[in-house]
Length: 292
Image: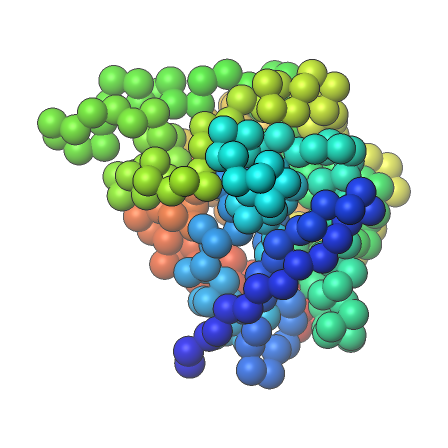
């Protein structure tokens, strides 16, 4: 079935106009909200969103503050300022993510809402869940990390591939860490709305430090969590994702699943085994909302 993508805007509490997108299934069985990573934008998830919508899951995603169409509007079209969140910073960005959740629930009352949060989006989702344990009916953390100084890489993410180009004779792009598929790095570099991100420079020290933390007390035991990543994702150090899963279990979450893909890197939705990832994530979501 051909899925049409629509676009709309809403204003957050600081008056920032947020651009959002919807991929509506014909007779949806549930809703999926996507929270993208730093240095990118929601439309990079178009193929995944269309797959979900064709599976009966309507999808909503926003360009977070400072990113994509939202960031271009904030910064008067100056791409060199993309990544700067604006007034309210990280907390305001998380608030507009939750605002979109409310819009989804208003448009589709009674249907479960699953958050698919990637990278920076997943770090925000962990923070939101601590404060709002039932914000969503299920949570997928993709390309995430256990948010400690020891287990979350804050340095050079492409270090393992600094002398390993994606193809013989090719030059190192600096974005080999995203995927084994060299076209992903090429597309990222060619996209005017994508950019290399230094969190401390873009967010400031205070907001950069706010991204660290652990699962808190008072989590909802019935809200299932999927932690999924590539085994070669440099954002997560050591056994950090296992420790994250254990931390959620210790906080009482009954259904915590881990799915790690051997050889895959940071963007599992853009990996060479993306079809497998699409299918696995979709199945996990369908199984969880079936019991909602």
